[in-house]
Amino acid sequence: MEWRRKVIITKLREGLTYGEAAAVAGIHRQSFWRWVNGSEEFAQAVAEARLQGQAERTYRLWLRHPFRGKRPPTGKGHGGPPKYSYGRR
Image (cartoon, rainbow, N blue to C red; front, side, top):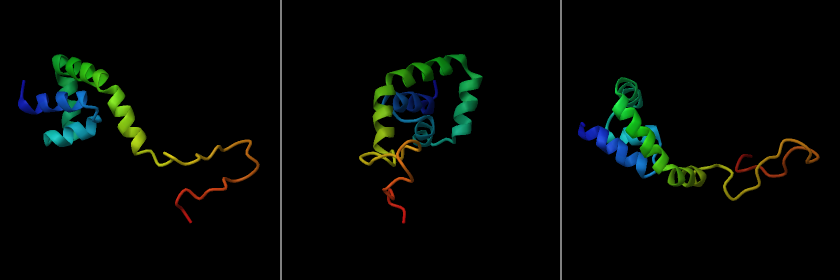
């Protein structure tokens, strides 16, 4: 297996997203998807690595969420527009 594919598999196990793992390997995410669609062996390795990194990826995405630590807008049943600006003025 090419070294870039090994890097992608390793980074997916560490919890990176598809695009982030492709960027670390130095390729575009479209090239990554061409590789996945072109090789059944690579596609299976990607799926397994993605499952292994799921908990870490969920945590990383939660850290980047815009409402982390704030009250999210509910949309219904709160008696009007949200009372917080969430950083917007």
